[in-house]
Amino acid sequence: MTYWFTRYKYKFTEVDYSLFLTYSVLVGTVGSFITIYLFSKRWKIEDSIIGIIACVSRVAASVVYAMAPNRTVYFLGPVLDMFSAAAATSLRSIATKLVNADEVGKTSSLISISEALVPVIYSPVYSKVYLSTLSTFAGAFYLISASLAVPASLIYITLYIIRRKEIQQEQSTENKRDGEVTRF
Image: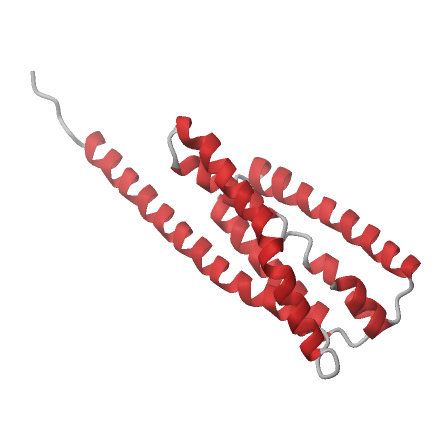
């Protein structure tokens, strides 16, 4: 859809679109490096927070893509979208931490199957929306992505709250144990 959208709205040529895709991939690579190396490894930011950042990134980028009045603003989209790939990474990380070691393979397989099915389901939806709104609001299909990121954000927020409560309970249990006097 993106190819047809950019050709229609911004009069991209094949070369323009190729340059845009290259730019998007390079910015996305930088975003992946930042989220995996800096956020996760270096700064130890919790996976659910990274998921929230990824969803906010997706919503912001989708709105910019949909509403961009010109090419220059449209090219801002990949910068806003640079963290969105981290959603899948954080989901995998959270899921594998929630299951037993012998279930990690099954969990990863389930996630992979789900990721493979998403384009099968959403491509026709995007196409239908694009064709239905082409003359009135050609970027409307981008808002589908934004709207799908909102429930995902709520799930990540819920996971974060649950994790915070678990940490607080563990800390209070440790504090109680530290205050105990053992009698022989």
